[in-house]
Amino acid sequence: MLLRQFKPSSLTSISRFSTEALKLVKVERVGKNQSVGLVALNKRPYNSLSSDLMAEVAQSLRAFEKDDSIGAIILTSTSPKYFTAGADIRQMLGNDFFEISGGTFLTNWNCFERCSKPLIAAVNGYVFGGGTEISMACDIIYAADNSLFSQPEINIGTIPGAGGTQRLVRSVGKSLAMEMILTGNKITAEEALRAKLVSKVVPVDQLRDEAIKLGEKISEQSGLISLMVKESVSRSYESTLTQGLNYERGLFHKTFATNDRKEGMSAFAEKRKPKWTSS
Image 1 (cartoon, one colour):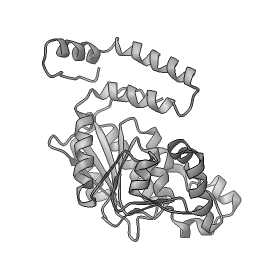
Image 2: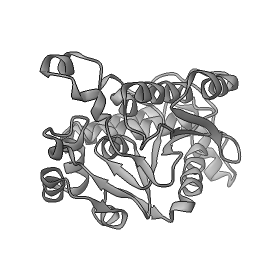
Image 3: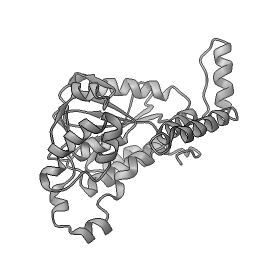
Image 4: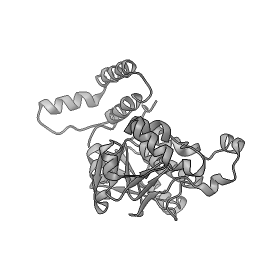
């Protein structure tokens, strides 16, 4: 369950992470009201998704998640040429079955679906393997026009292990997913848009600004109700239609026990901007 009480954290905590503890990601507050958290992969070469990088990503998401002033989080790259080329193959190379299945290599890869705040993947360039997988684990994907998506694991004798065979089918359908995973073929940003893998394609030099605008728009809404939206939409992945509809209805009813539902409807009737309290 994602729904839980918000717990504020100090503004200095994010600054401390970015300047002291974090070496492989860059973290900052963005937007006019500093209401959007931004986590940028910053590991050379190609942002390979090693355990240490993923640990820093998870740490950064948790910090933003606990902060009431942050309404949405962007995951992106510091390089305009690549989001990530995928998992760190050198780190995996020496593992056998017992080491990979009993180890911690994928420990932090579920930080995206566990994050209670809306996550925007703003991707560009190479979005390969684990890059496609972590993008799909976010809630919304914006792609730069130079993006290339692929699941090339078959070329190194394995299969996607962080959601590629599951989420990609749900995003683009069985036929295209099978083709991509069985061949390792790449698709362009425009092809990804037509296949409904991404929701928007923008010029690479506008990617950051467009993602921030989206994050700001989301941050203007009630944080509590955004949580409920994310919870309900995410549940559709895990349930039948009937189960999902019942779950949605239950959350809809619960909104009528919140102050933000009262405020939102009152503000609408009074033709004014609502003042959310996330309660």
